[in-house]
Image 1 (cartoon, rainbow, N blue to C red):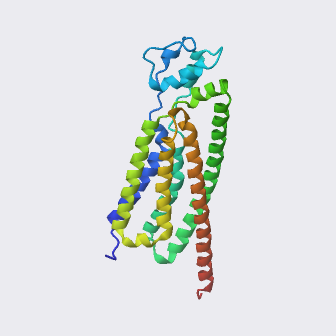
Image 2 (cartoon, rainbow, N blue to C red):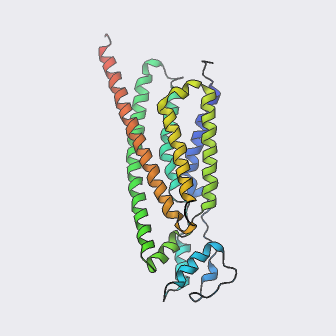
Image 3 (cartoon, rainbow, N blue to C red):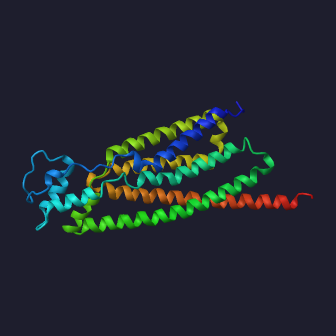
Length: 275
């Protein structure tokens, strides 16, 4: 029972790597085609539109509230800015990449000689934490700026609201839900593989907490996507991205501190070792 089962460890690494790839590539994987709102073009405000898709009705209702607004302009703007899967899913990579790095370094300890293991792990963790800090901080600022922009537009009735609906009023919630479900399945499978690889992984509190943080981030984004009507999901998705970015930054700081402590210990041992 004390022997490391390497196939399961490799499987866990592969599953987590797939998670990161899916998250980073989600803008490509999720459809970005605009809803067919062409029926709105050339209509008069508040005129009934036969066969109007359900996702287009909020936009048509918003147009009805404004005067001297050409629906075709709103639809054209929306089509020129097709809906994206948002920020929440790509931002999950901030946490999952740190989890993958931590587990990969643990797996590397099976290959790297013990005398150089501390140096390699400390240095690699330090570099990864610094990259995560810089990236996470920039992404956090971007998510905050986008959230404030969307909230400001929604509150600026009627024309700001129309502009928001035209650009962000349609969110691919179905595709995002499918992607989040896939990610959760991969992460749970990776956790099972870790336990099967060696039960001592459960004794590593840092790894367990980081893994639970990854699951929590996934659940938070999924919850926020289903919390509000579809025309507001872009805002809650950005809020989810902010939460995930903060979680990633917290873990980046913790890993950075741990890496510095590890490097200092290695240097002290090197100095204390006889020549």
